[in-house]
Image (cartoon, rainbow, N blue to C red):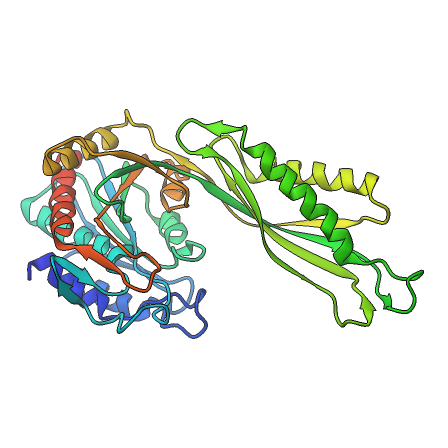
Length: 377
């Protein structure tokens, strides 16, 4: 195997499934140890960030030899469940030009490419600083990249998530809310005393569906419309009682120009209208996790350099794409770091079988090295 394929196989063998997704899962401790040692053995300056015990993010830095611009390569070292994988997800199997295993595509392939490209660039020598951020927890709340950005900044960034050798310039954000509908507990035989919170919640669910329909008319030219859906619902204690509370958890996918605050205003408008039109309707609105949408500047220096070098490797202009899901690009962008996303080809993210093409692994590694040598000149 090539250097990058061998490194990927070693990474796959280490269980780094996210414990915030799967109770009791291994977390990033062991893979963090491995990456930290790899950086040290290749003479990188190494920083281990571990605000969350057992959940480290590792930053390897190759200091420049001049005054060039700095670049951060970012990728996550956690994976989703091994239990959902068909077979042994920790066994890297090569077949038909592909390497199979949990995380091979999402995104240990990108991590291996980042590390090897950084080592090659370090040996060649570059002027600006190169930071390689191997972060925890992207599959849940992304506290890894948040912690990295508390300590490190750079002139530009690349997130090496899998993208089928295409370039992602924009993606949606999201905002989570709990809508708590209040009722009044009472024995089922005493309807004059009770208020059925679950029945009242039905009015909100109908209004939520109508709200979703209105979003279809508010389009981003690349990402399309924002969306909303009810994700979870809970309420009641037993069959013989009126429920005092019903909680609906919802997710609102956002496009540029929409924020958690603007979404909260829209939801309150709906809920306040129901308090006026539905007898005994009462609610609380509780904001949850929120992440901003992302849109790169295609005219930025890092975007032009990345597109040019990837196009050269492919032999044609790379396809520019937009994603309906969220990535750590938004956090880099919010920190004032111009960035974009590209990565390996393959398939099976979060699926029963996952694989990366070895050809794309080599292409991404070579392209990253060339981008570093060009941008950090």
